[in-house]
Length: 115
Image (cartoon, rainbow, N blue to C red; front, side, top):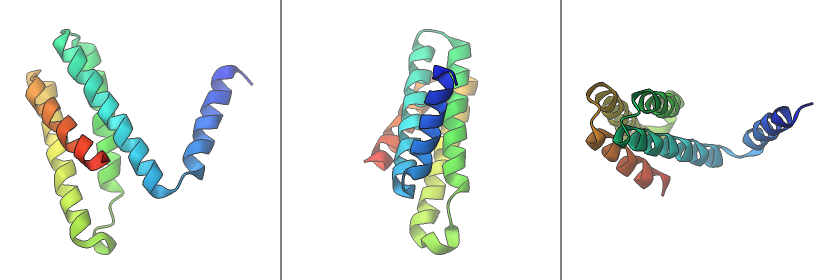
């Protein structure tokens, strides 16, 4: 097994052995990192990098949204769903308009959620 495969296996095991709240925090961290990289790419006029990182952030937030249990989670889940919808709209705006402000809004919300 190559070194890269060992690393992938380690990550797979780490994810499968963590509890749900730890996994959510890992997803928030990934979304924050991707949004931050997208913002840096935007500032450097790296359009391809911006798009790639916005898509990564979008995929993570979309997965968080899809995992919500609106029946069991009640009002908390509904509020999270609204925040995730806001984030997804802001990511789309940032990608289309190449505007840093929506990415800054996304980072602000994600950092608050991560705390």
